[in-house]
Length: 133
Image (cartoon, rainbow, N blue to C red):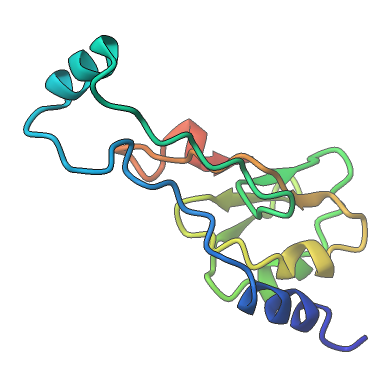
């Protein structure tokens, strides 16, 4: 199929959003007060929504399998992948990545994959957790 993402996009049109609602039905004056109410049984918390099966999260990279062809760099629309010419390897900037998956499809050695990890917050966009070497 020339456009493998089309069926996936169409399937998402008919699914309900996978978002976590605020833990309580009404916004409390303080979170501490809400937790005290929950402890006394006066309030309940919304359960967390499970992570969807095909969630496209943080990029993973098998450095040993990479041959340095740079096809992933050429297809990345967000310019989130940078070359390391001396090592013939790549560096992925997670803070720029839009999890489109085009690099995973372009890689001839399948050394790139999207994981189910989605907690990528940091104050520093170049932190060790947001740069995959």
